[in-house]
Image (cartoon, rainbow, N blue to C red; front, side):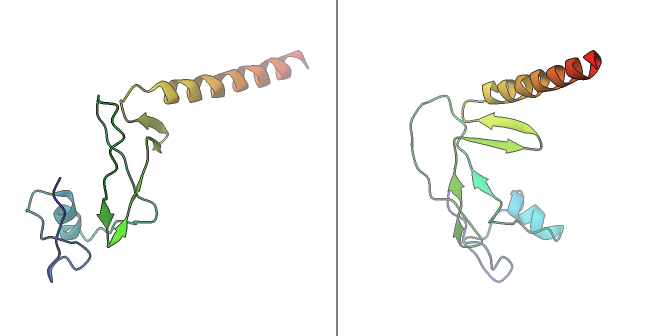
Length: 104
């Protein structure tokens, strides 16, 4: 994706985005992105480790290979392995605790 350039309407961006982009919609709805909480992840079938320089509000976003978003774990290939493992671990812990309570 090309870099974004800013103008007076988008002082926080590097280019003036087309009207259909997320930054433009966010600006229209008076939403702001928090660059300290934002991360970038490339989702692809290839295993390349290409490092992209993605900026938000003139700050480079950390590029990650997996992330947690609203309780779902995503990885770069969308395999959901991490999410399934995390959910299974929580289930095992809960089952163990319920067994202990039931034996009392």
